[in-house]
Image 1 (tube, rainbow, N blue to C red):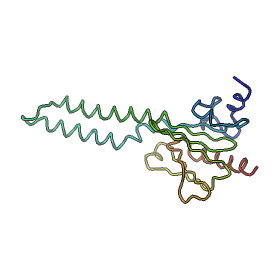
Image 2: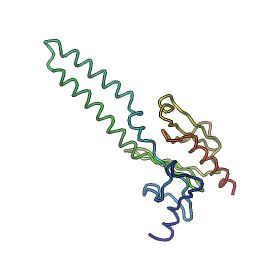
Image 3: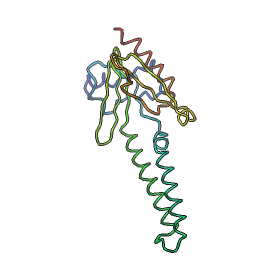
Image 4: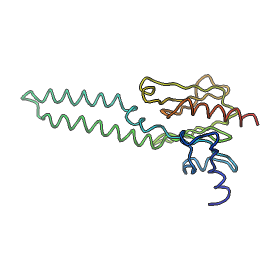
Length: 191
């Protein structure tokens, strides 16, 4: 590993405790986006609970479809059994959870001493980045299902925008992560 690459993968542990998801190595997906001497403060993915939580609507629909098909299988003119109905519902649920797992894998968030990054998307990948000096507003939002599991979503708005530009969804310890981001903005954006 070259000296420049080694500098790019440094993590500032004082600002990002391991409990928040700091790691020693920056994933390749974001490594290329960093400049020389840029210090990585925090690297996160959504919680693994993102997979079932983001799929709840489809899982409920799969259960309703499976139950409806199982009910209809009792009529003599229907050409499927309860087993077929359960298989169809389980297949829909499995496919949705599989898609959510792939989507989870492609979500990646990073905070450096210069900018905030969010990468997401499966077929069409997007990389959002904003200099810390341009971050004007942040917000922590917890839906009921996130609050139950101590998760949350953090939104970021840059100067000149009336809406939030990017979100770090379903992160663990959202208030601690938010505090780390605010500390980084205070410390590095005013340089």
